[in-house]
Image (cartoon, rainbow, N blue to C red):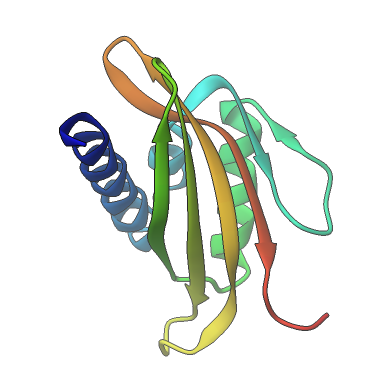
Amino acid sequence: MGESNDLYNTICAANEVFMERFGQGNSAGVAGLYTEDGQFLPPNSDEVIGKNAIQGAFQGLMDAGIKAIQLETLEVENYGDTASEVGRFTLKDEGDQILDRGKFIVIWKLVAGKWKLHRDIINSSLAA
């Protein structure tokens, strides 16, 4: 249990950095948390592949008025140099109003000693 607990804490810490960078409007910093060939798979849209495209996608979210993202990790499973995470997200505007909330799955990869987001799929829990 110790090893998986350590990984859970590591993933939660990485998500803290993600939330902080997003809140600062730092789309390049968010994209830097992904692998080189990372994929962001948002709802109602095609897949977003590679760090430059991921940066653009997150910049688009920020430009659309999303000022904060909250991530809650529910489950982490380790498969060696790969891990899966299941969690919940909440997107808020600058008035702290909830714009969207839902769930996500991230496939993490260990790259040069750091866990990076490799495949990131999100979907809303709100009615269309």
